Image (tube, rainbow, N blue to C red; front, top):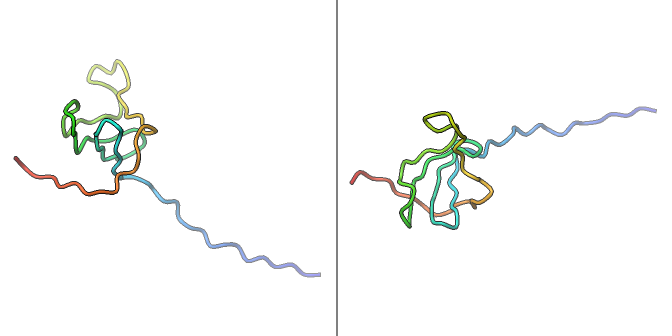
Length: 83
């Protein structure tokens, strides 16, 4: 008896970053890694455009990360410009 297998071709792992996601508060964040990203739109004020979270605060006292599970993929478009 003879047995031959043909392995399935390996597909490279897809890195989901960078990606845009939006939370219920209206923020659109460009995630550059897990729980790490930059605000690119803020409909209701609060965090300013350019706010970065991912790592530690300036005093290294506590982590500042986005709770990525509170965000959904953003499929619209964003236009950035200087004022």
